[in-house]
Image (cartoon, rainbow, N blue to C red; front, side, top):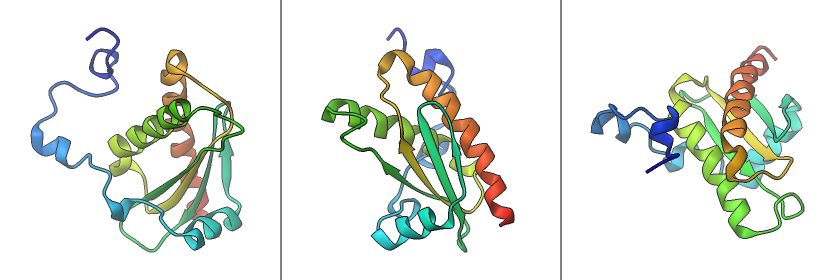
Length: 137
């Protein structure tokens, strides 16, 4: 399959089945309630990029949790919103073991399509790395 994630190097081909099972995005790794989203937004620790903005707040768990905000003003079609959410979930899922115990909200700020998904992934990885600064607050 040309242009797949395996060929681009985003996901390794040699990952064992056990490793892939650890890459799941279970319910415990998600922000689900309005209060959880509000507390992260009110903490006011965020990093911006061209396509996304990442808000972070330390949590008292042993793992990171993530929520996604995609507005209809930014991405008008459901197809575009679903692509954005899949892209963000995949980056979080494959890198969640490197992210400290923080609650993260990823907000899509600018429309993107398949042609620049790799740029968005790189930007999101950089912003997730920068979100470690919020731990000191």
